[in-house]
Amino acid sequence: MQMSITDIDLALALGGLFAGIMVGLTGMGGAALVTPMLVLLFGVSPAAAVSSDVVAAAIMKPVGSWVHIRNHTVHWGLVGWLSAGSIPGVLVGSWIFSAVLATSGADETIRAWIGGVLVLALIAMLAKGYLTRRARLRGADQQSTGIDTEVKVVRTVILGLIVGLIVGMTSVGSGSLMVTILILLYPLLRPSVLVGTDLTQAVPMLVAGAIAHAGLGEISIAVVVSLLIGQIPGVIIGARLSTRYDGHLLRWLLMVILAATALKLLGAPSLLSGVIAIVGVLIVGGLMIRDRRRASGAATGITGLTESVK
Image (cartoon, rainbow, N blue to C red; front, side, top):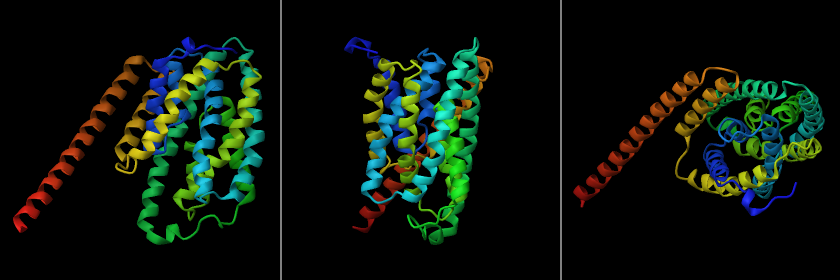
């Protein structure tokens, strides 16, 4: 378990930086981006990738949750009931994960699990975008309640149990799946409270999962440290950039990457997943350039109008 400074992977730290920036900018990604990146780009075994990411997330989540706790944007009733389901769920998921490790095709099975959950995460992201747009159309009524919303106990505990189970098996889902289902269960909950509640409820779940996975001996300390070196400043940078850019096109870019990654993990030919990724990046990149030019043109027009008035 010991490591030295020479064990730190700078390329992996840069990957963590990219993932952190995406999370800070878009509020999406997290394990859905990091775990496949470890497997496909850095050659980490699926088992070590899942366990290491659970530990890294357990260290990262409290940082984000503390900000929301200070801002009073956490629904503690929801946190408690979600944790009542997610903590036993993540322990059961970790037990299933450990049982699969004892089989001969463990890596292939875990890769398939991750790919399948990425598909679910992608669907959840699309659903979240739709629900968010619908909420905006409803206007002020959508923002009318927050931390005093009444908890639907049974549904909330079941949600925590399911998400905890998935996180224990794959490390993916604590954000992308949780927030979308919370929107469905609590459509009047303010977005800031949704995010704060999700981050805070994930802390005890991930700590329990990290302890369980640590007992399996699959954690790579070098991977965890390398990831955190990039992720911590990345999230901070992304959060600051988000005040200037809403990140809507980057969300589409992230979904394209997740779609191509899921296909690759599920056994699709590299050519197919590569073509999807390249075409998606080109399309989203072109749209970003178009938006940038429109913004520059609008700024130039305003400047010209001001000068003519003078």
